[in-house]
Length: 329
Ligand SMILES: Nc1nc2c(ncn2[C@@H]2O[C@H](COP(=O)(O)OP(=O)(O)O)[C@@H](O)[C@H]2O)c(=O)[nH]1
Ligand SMILES: [Mg+2]
Image (cartoon, rainbow, N blue to C red; front, top):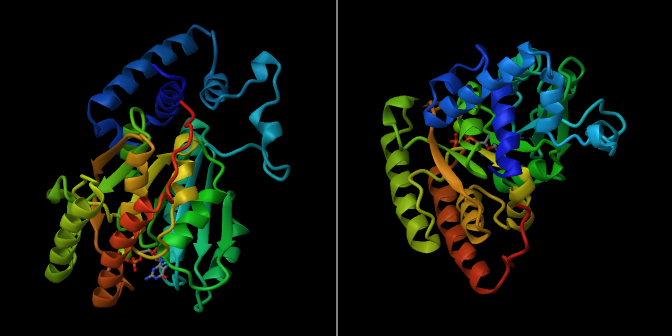
């Protein structure tokens, strides 16, 4: 088992608690994690080491070897670098954000209380004009780990996700839509998948029974046509590239965001194309999902832009704009 896989496995052990129902229901990988947790529990009872020590080891804290700890390496104002980062792109989300921050905050609190895992939450304000930034500032006073990241104007969802992901400090970072169409509690499934992958893609196509509220028929049809073009133009094989719920092992995946060029809604296929290009393993994971009627996507305009984005990815690739670099193992 590689060092990276061991990190994720230990992270999962710490999360496999009653607060993480989806993780317990997950498949064989969760079972492996659970068995490994049993071992850890045995060792804890034996008094050989406790949860804090396991956590530090899982995050690569070299204190035991006399090297500087993550605590010392972190920004001075933070007590410790976070384990998990949640990025929320937000454009005119003042209405939807309070409930979202409450739920993500509760989820983050559960991780801390049950597993000792610290989370940071980054809301990227995409030039909103409805007081989104003020809502975040207000919540930051009572929600530890919440940070506002501001774009200079309205730059698009792709730009916002890239901006937020490049600001994260967690070993694992995930992005989610502000309406939590995929509930944040489903994050356990993505984290379980990262046990053996670098990228975990939330998917609405693998198990349609998990969709609680569907998009309109025309939007679903447009999604299927777009998916066919994604395969044709980029070779990306996944059934749903557009679900706004994806998690990354940032050690290896940071390059995806560094090279990402698409700044509107067509950025997901580019990220997945880049993952393949750089030899990262990406897996599609079925997640619960419910369409939120507050969608601000403009069907015709944004669909046309997304098709054009696929042409741009193809062109960028031919023009050598996605250079390969040596990757950390
Ligand atoms: N519409 C729109 N959404 C943006 C923009 N920048 C960031 N977002 C965020 O992208 C996410 C998805 O938007 P949403 O309207 O729910 O789209 P849908 O669910 O795919 O129909 C939300 O978190 C938005 O706040 C932007 O320029 N336009
Ligand atoms: Mg939505």
